Image (tube, rainbow, N blue to C red; front, side, top):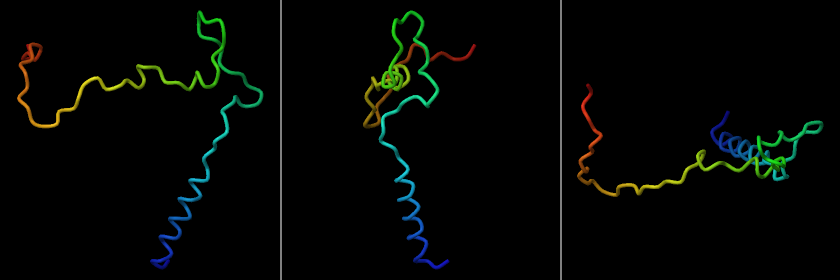
Length: 82
């Protein structure tokens, strides 16, 4: 294989891979139903509600990253092993 053909093949592969995406709304497969309602809930969840991540699955960062080297504060829980 010649050197100029490699980038062309790679570009064609990337374009083919990019064309695989689907933008249609998600629905259950034909012949299947959505999962039953959670215990205690009156109604089944819709597709969009099932796709939402709970807060524990993707928590927001609550602390700032340190931008420079700083002296650490004394940690009362940093005890030697017993």
